[in-house]
Length: 206
Image 1 (cartoon, rainbow, N blue to C red):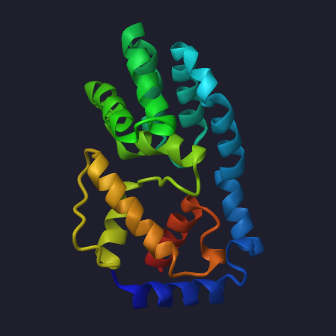
Image 2: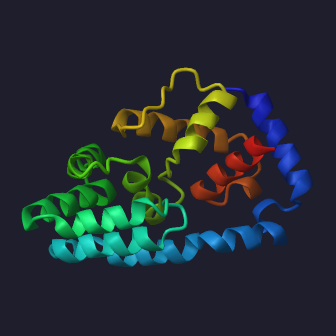
């Protein structure tokens, strides 16, 4: 990992935006993504006790994905239509997978969700990771393909190979790298994981 480049990017960012994400210009950008509001919604509708109603869980997945600023406009209607077309048993499997992703055996949940989404040709990183990162914005990560590929290339994460099909092994390894990178920068560059990956995206674009 190229720590020197990361520190240089931090210095440039803090010079351009004094106060980091507390800078007024950055606050305007952050408002577009409404991380706090989306997190509150997700933590309410996907609390442990809500999973006794799989059909409602799937509807809430549709609601969250439809409202997310981080999911592609092309993926939203495809997910909605596919999720609503699922048979009751498939909805139960999808809901159980999400439960485990958030509250149980994460690897099992990841693979269970992926299996259902792959059947609908929707095994996408964005759909797999958006709800977990809203539920745990300081623990989980949102894997955006272009940003992720650039982070691996620019910052020299040499033992990571990005592939379009999600895998739990990659997710865990990439998440560990993000945690390590966060430890090398000012707190004002990392109020939460979506903001930190947003910071990485911004500094790589410049």
